[in-house]
Amino acid sequence: MTPTLHVHDPAERENLATFAGHAVRLDPAAVIRLRRRGHDYVSAWAATSFEVLAVRTVVGELALDDITVAGDLLLSSLSGPAAGAPIDLGYSMDSAWRSSLPPMSGFAHVEDVPARSLIELAERGASIAAEHAGGHGPPASLLDQAVLTVTGGADRVEVPMRVVFALTAMDFIPHGGDRTDSRRIPLDEIVRVRATAAWLRLDARYGSVARRRAGAGPSLRVLG
Image (cartoon, rainbow, N blue to C red; front, side, top):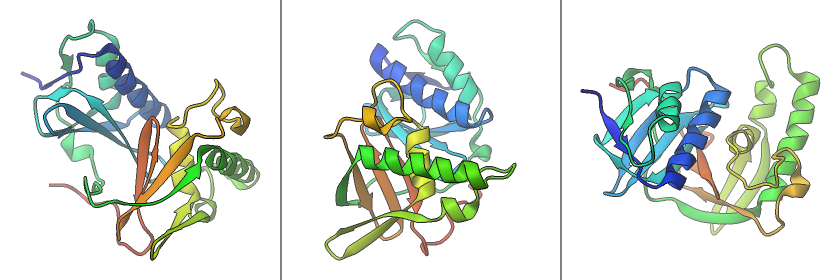
């Protein structure tokens, strides 16, 4: 019997489907890692093509503590059954998940930044990438460039372009119908920058992205 996920609220079901849809759009072979968070929540993780992790948490009940499933199957299962019906997760694909996850706690709030500023950075980055990209996407030098620096207390956090690209590609910032137009982002919409000694995380209204900080060691490993 394959494991199941219960998401009773149609709005939460749609939230998860939207997350899975963005992950599959970025990578048709994407896998989604589902982790139980307390009794009533499930966090869905995806490894984006920018080498940045994306996560969205929904109200739901997961039969297992932790399972990785095919993104396209999850998306299909979310679109099929009626609201409240169990969501068939298919067979476990745990061996396909190769990224370590950040800790669930311990992140310190560093600073809030205007969401519009991040969209503007992504717009400029996309323009530069279009000029210099070859057949393999944006150059690594652009993706690794620190485009935002924030400070909080004694901590100074640099945000590379790849993290900004991942945040906008996953559509985590509310917009007025065109996520590529910064003018449609409300002026008071913010993105919260949080960090640990090893991880950087950007929290937007519809989800978060996370990446190991420079010098904190590799973010990829084979999980047993």
